[in-house]
Image: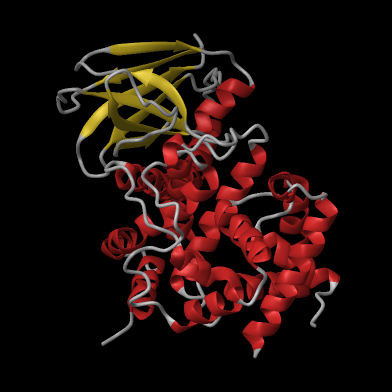
Length: 239
Length: 182
């Protein structure tokens, strides 16, 4: 009778599902670097895979597909936000370059005229994010004042929803998942969020923001479950 | 007429190109089967649906990695679901045992009524090879693969030391491999 060698035996048990948690983690890591193990696993997946055909199907809950779509929608928004952010950064760089040229001329003029402005540079204080639908509809405004350490989210004019609530999320690749900033519904409603300068503020300034439609009382799972309708990112609002 | 697997391959390549309609169709065609797979292992609809959600998200992101030379679409997707479900089951060390309340709607019989009619050749061959095992060993393989039972759980269930279970598993798997290669 055929015997399984160590690699094949490990691969077979990994696919069969009989390994402990620690062993599974170890195999998952090893297969990345070890081609023979990875190939052996793929071969066992092919051998045993047809068994799933004998499992009786169970219909998923009606809203599961929407949850999946919302998760995909959120990740796509983040991707497109990143693209938009890069475009803005490139544009800002062009303006900066143009500005350097202009100021050089200005400086030489200033030199000629012997005029000197006492120019004190201040750090930017005001940041704003317009949370829109990607087209023209602005739903929410997010402002951040780094002088007072206060962020404010304002519902500008989101469409009225019956039996649903708007929930605001902060998304960052430095966090494991979206973080809820709370619910804001009525046009004109404001929600203040005091924060600490330092890492918390840095995270906030570089995050993306999204608003999803959730059941009254907010998402039951702690992550967006409904469609993501508005997204945006903070930009500097004052020089 | 294209086979079901070929249709799913077309849908998967659509998904790889970001085609949302193809993704919706793929979900329609496979979600029930895949939830069945996750539920057998996790025994909780809530957790099984979470696993399915993550798995479909992964399918959306990784559809471009699918290779029809290596696996059929259902096998590829079921592998994603099973891996997540098994990780989750092993993570929940204190998984309630013997609580079958959430399984009342699932047939205890492995056989799905109409499955036998349109069963593909590879399924028939695997079942034939499984039938070649002693009944207890066949049972162990099915309980491990379909119900996600660990070596420890199998040892308890069959009242044998884990070492014995491991030996049985390796022999049974070697025999299966030999039979499938014939």
